[in-house]
Length: 116
Image 1 (cartoon, rainbow, N blue to C red):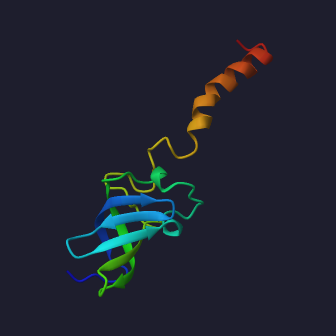
Image 2: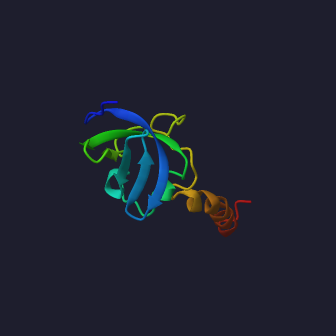
């Protein structure tokens, strides 16, 4: 198959490292999504975005046909299959602590102002 810069393709996550996500494309090509190509925001851990074995969409930003290797990006596309565009429904997105603490904080303030 011919791969071109700018194409968006389906890949399978085959490895995770502190610096990026390794993917399998087909029997001839592998790829890497460098940590800087995962999100427009700071990425502490790539496992917050994908899991081993996930099938995701990725944009080709570089092709090395001789080595059978693609440089990929997911930071400006809707990479998760089955996810509503622009809405990340996972709770491991950094806001879970706030979500879990908010009811307690509200109850504390109600008591403080005698609103119960």
